[in-house]
Length: 593
Image (cartoon, rainbow, N blue to C red):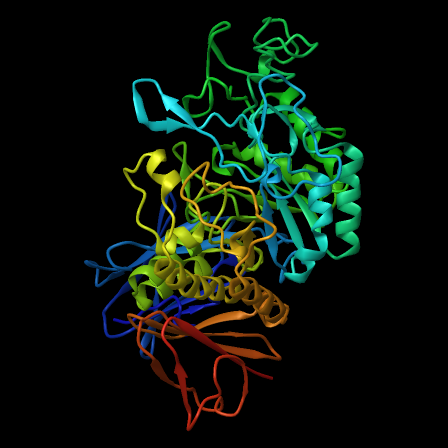
């Protein structure tokens, strides 16, 4: 028997489908009876397929949902995908994602560490430590273990809104079209994931006027501003909880009659309460509590307020920990404020079939997120570059291409590094930091040989990031060759007087190439996959781009497809006699049409 969902002769159309779309399945081979077994998490359906010449066929339409399927042959044998069912994603026929971000480039900024502008902010609370710009991030001993130290996130370097404004030309030169800012609301840590006041810019970063100026100047340059929405918890030191009594409000910690009491879940008032991953400084909120939902999503709520003041969308922190109903309300709020605003979720796995809190999630079915941060691509890229395995790489990429609605696929935030991961240069060329304490991580730096190999590998990673479906996202400073293991060493300040010219120019080159429309919504077609070599095509109705990657230490000679011999070479040497030679740790790109 033969069936391959990536073969249009077997499943038509390819990939995820709309809820009113007809899907035809064809299983080829000799049998007496073939039955399509279609499953959800709560039901199972048996559909007898009709014999038609050399195949068994059936056509179905399905309501919105995630389905898994396999075939029963002759009433006994189960035919499936390596002992597990295939997936069919059926999404809302009215699901749309704004075109305004597709085809662009995102640049992620950790605001405190990017750039100091004029009149830098100063500490406004006694518990804040203001460091010199070139200092190392601080960490402190854990009691009883001097080697294993913790980060208390109270060191501030003074990066601010005006600093970002001063570097807009720099970002434009990288072909950046959107800036994703880690949290900017008032909070009492340098990462600001412990929100103190959702309606205020942290005074260390500037004022509302500074934010408006950033949005307006960025917009004039074709750059959008995306904010970080941290809505699963607040800080304990906040207007709403007010554990430290800092604010002139009656917080939930102070009184059970507080207007904010219903937001939180106390076991024993006031000191035992549900908190995020056990951190007492991060009390969890009940997102579906009506007053909280209205505060975030209402007519004059947090989302509406910031979009009206210039933001073009939100990235949702720990989106997979937010309830479905709350996500739906966030989407409604964002689209009501601006139908072109983008909603990106933080989900580390395949977001189309993720199970969290005992439930299959519906992130990409049309009622919740537009798209997600693309950790599966990051994992596939790093694994291929470090270990080889082109077939495994291609299969991992195709799983996402198959499972995600096309709208979400082309809007994916394609990351290779973030504030939650090691710096990509370190991840590719450095020793593993597993079971290494922070003292070791603080001192670890690549030697010259490791660094040069790391740059070569990183250039391949960037090349993949920029040519796969989705929107490449640069973590601030990666383009300049910054190194660092885990928090806080991946969150150092940029040294604006130091950069890797080779890397920076590579980012600029690929940024200009990425503006080609074929990368916005073009098809992804795998061509070849070996241990150390992969090739694929991106194409639309007008253009095709042929992409080849060699991750080995030896040159690779690739036979070109018919008709490509005399086409334009964008990256790499020109082919000779139908052969493209790709040097070690290198790549090539050709275009036609």
